[in-house]
Image (tube, rainbow, N blue to C red; front, side, top):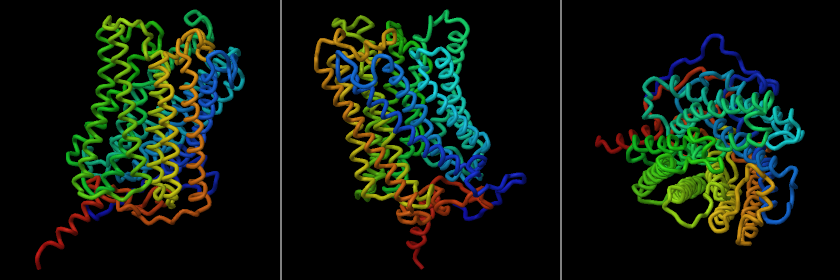
Length: 562
């Protein structure tokens, strides 16, 4: 890395307002990133609470336990939308907005005002979405205008996230420091580009479907015959393989933390980028959209079924390849790295991405073999059972939340200037990890062993009153395991928020140095946290590991005989 710097400020760049009002008008990627991260965690609590209520209803095969017949379907739909569109995607999008410019030597995001607009559009749309559900709208709602309002709010969320993804992808493609080539960027930056690019090609598909649904419901109701067909046509955005796109940044976080802990470069950088890209590429689920959620659709049959199996197989291959490369880096170090919350959390998150891909592959292969005439037991497709809920749990709660826990502990010094409490963080890992495993194991086994239905689009009440659908009474007990897991997860999220409040809000956390971890990537060359606004000077980067380059150069100089 060169020590030379170059001026980066441009005429006409607005000066940041340091007052609270400045958060409304900010053009600073660091402020926008913090807003996304903080608000997504709060929405996670809301989504998890509704998921718990839904799962409590599934613990009885003959009666509703919590939500009731009139609100169960709406609670189910809202919990999924909250966990993906209000938590998982925006949390890592906000993290990318904050970290990517620092990692590539850029002064700001490519479209800083658009990034700010994306946050406020997302926030306002989220509030409208909640209001639509409260007014008996949303899928299966009884208020027609509330159903329309839900679709408008949903389109606002999609446009906001799409705008943010475009801003991140454009920044990476066009604003890297001179000499920093794409195959030299830090792994988190690369994973952010993969995820943002796949969002850019998949979210417009959802937006187009929402437009069709809105026009039909508002002006004709010919295609849907009311609102009962809405959820069936948008549910794919919350399912695998699409979910793999959202957790790709988790793999980038894992690579950052593990390689820094091992004090080594990855054995083959191009292989690392290729494997991360594979997970994103094979996570593209928009091509299947309605077909993978429609009961009786033929997507699993014949050639199309093979393609679906191949998507899961590709995601599995990419995850195995990346974890293998990172494991090799640790082995080459010849000593175990220092235990930390970030390290154990990325180990858990990476493992659960692997589990999610493997479970998806088993389910898709089993469905294809049966529908293609190679099975003879006549069981329903696993994609129509709570097997799907298990996949969602392991990726959203397991990989996503553990990956975010690792990222926040790793980058809290750079984001807020304070380190989070490590003891509390390790306890947080155990709580979230245990909750995620129970939330995954319960519905997965229930779908496999008892064929408990995941969501019956034509008759949502049958989802919770499933005594006529399953022969094994064990479904209720397995659903209880999943509900207990979500309850534990809520406690884990509360613990994370407590850690943030005490360590950052009350300033009880250790004040961070520029590089408290002995890391590798360029953001650790900057103050913790970087000053508000655009910097006057930027480092000239030729590598994504400048600190490691400097350490190696110093070691080589010491070995030269005088």
